[in-house]
Length: 137
Picture 1: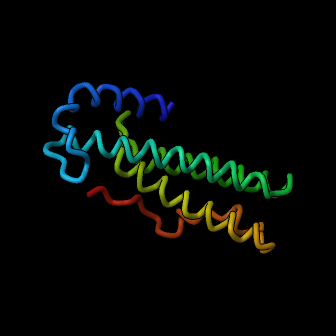
Picture 2 (picture 1 turned 90 degrees about the vertical axis):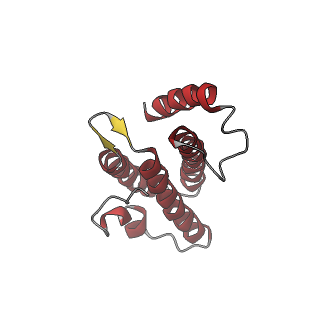
Picture 3 (picture 1 turned 45 degrees about the vertical axis):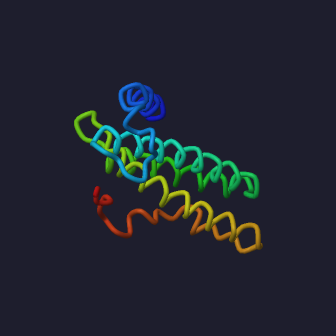
């Protein structure tokens, strides 16, 4: 669902901001350009998240995979609650939360590949440590 919404937003923005975003995302000229750039970043982060999750799955036992799956479902609920309100998605928040989760999954993958795969870290809810949603800039 989220991916569909982002793709729809991205498609709409491509047509409306193609000329003004032609110089890239380094210097957005208006809020449409900025949104276009954040959607681009979010889509890349979402792809990276899916790849990191799939890579980690490959090195886990069945029991470890169940723990990771539970943590991932809890994280998705957190992301959805932290980065949306009244049906609107905060794309910048979503991007930041996804990037943070990708880093956590990469950390677990490195640990597991070196033989130090800890179940408590697979099911840890690191996003709960701060207790707050990331601030949008």
